Amino acid sequence: MGLTTARYWREVPQRYRMEAGECTACGEIHFPPRRICMKCGKQKFETVVLPDTGKVITWTVIRVAPDEFTDLSPYAVCLVELENGVRLMSQLVDVDLDEIEMGLPVKIEFRRIREDGADGVLFYGYKVVPA
Amino acid sequence: MRDVAVIGVGLSAWGEVWKQSLRDLITEAAVNAVDDAGVEKLDAMFIGCMSGGLFAGQEHIGALAADYLGMGPIPATRTESACASAGTAFRTGLMAVASGYHDVVLAGGVEKMTDVDGGATTRALAAAADQEYEAYHGVTFPGLYAMMAVAHMAKYGTTREQLAMVAVKNHRNGAMNPHGQSPFEVTLEQVLTATRVADPLRILDCSPVTDGAAAAILCPLDMVSRFTKSQAIRVTGSGQATDTIALHQRKDICAIESAALAAKVAYDMAGVGPGDIDFAEVHDCFTIAEIMVTEALGFCEQGQGGKAVEAGETALDGRIPINTSGGLKSKGHPVGATGIAQIHEIVTQLRGNAGGRQVKDAKRGLAQNMGGTGASSTVHILEVI
Ligand SMILES: [Zn+2]
Image 1: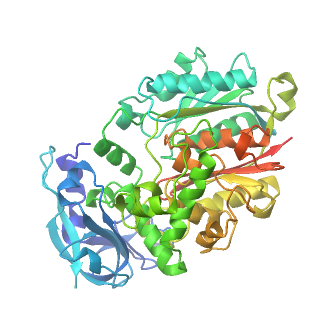
Image 2: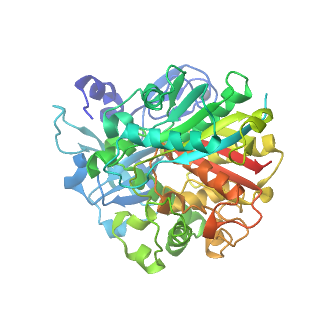
Image 3: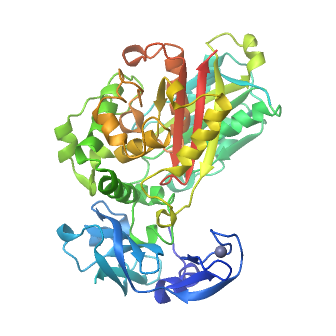
């Protein structure tokens, strides 16, 4: 599957700057941003930047990876709950794979996501590391 | 709305079927279903297929299927809901007959998965997840279910052994299914020491990659006397529901809410509850999925799915036999065909034709089919007339 420059560029505010959408009516924060609030259905949002710390809600170690990630395998991925309650999926790096546990405090860092593919796009974004 | 019955079912060859193409598979299943029903012509077709594009470079599956079945120019439409594609094909066919739009409808499903290599398969399956916020980060499909398993184990005390017991049970059933891809038993020890895929899931926790197709013929209940070749089975309940595409936005990652919601609609329509179901086929794409769906369908309390399999409640001779066919685990999982293959097993059981895996006094069965990590679910209830 090719990933074009335009498709990559559209997600840059989220992947590079951790931008989320906060509903001006009810305060629910959506990551990624949405057009319609999941909680109250209103359609007005303000851009907010997510906090950069949180904790691991669940995780796994991927040992059979898609082609593009084979050279990273095995690697950990986790579901993170940030300080403000917003959740996101991320790789968990700079960690001993045997020492990951529920509730592990983590911090968001800007990293290269994987090796360059055939798409002519460099893949950057957020990963989390133990805080 | 009209009441609807299934008057015929059929499967294609099933497994790593190198000699047959996508069109061969769906045609074989459709011919078998048409023969089983004893119908001369169809009024419409609905064909589930998850990713003809990524697996075979082929889209436009509805027209392809009608063409090769020799049923052109009837209306033929593909349905797609990831691994619930065939469940939605069945429901769409059901609605077409119930509404009076069509009388004799074929609902089918097909996937040709083994023409691409393992990496491409992993990527095609990951297309059911959120591409930008899950797959982009290297999260695989087994990886998502593994994370649900870790959370379920932490919250409810579900054990690694209980996960393995799902695979052992389903292979025990599947060993008695002549249509299965992996018709052999496995031991607890084999599951617990198999190659690791995404911790804690190992290869024997995962359904295999499968080529296959399945089809069912539907008609109005008051028309079944015209088609007496095989025993007709009534469809009494149907439900479908969705949830967030990404796991990170679920209210509760330890529960499959779409399955619970689809089940509620189907139970209400049939006027029954979980205690009235004699047996069920559920979407065990991974062992943890069967445990979570057992809970969602109300066959046990939330969080008790692991204990239910350990206690033998879901075994062939248990309180509520689950996956008598061997499930996706042993029978195989051609993703776009699975939902109708489940219907095939329900019909086979209700006709009393399931041989060594026959459930005693089977009068009412339930089939639950699921896409993604539960972003789509369908539930159908079928009963002996
Ligand atoms: Zn709101």
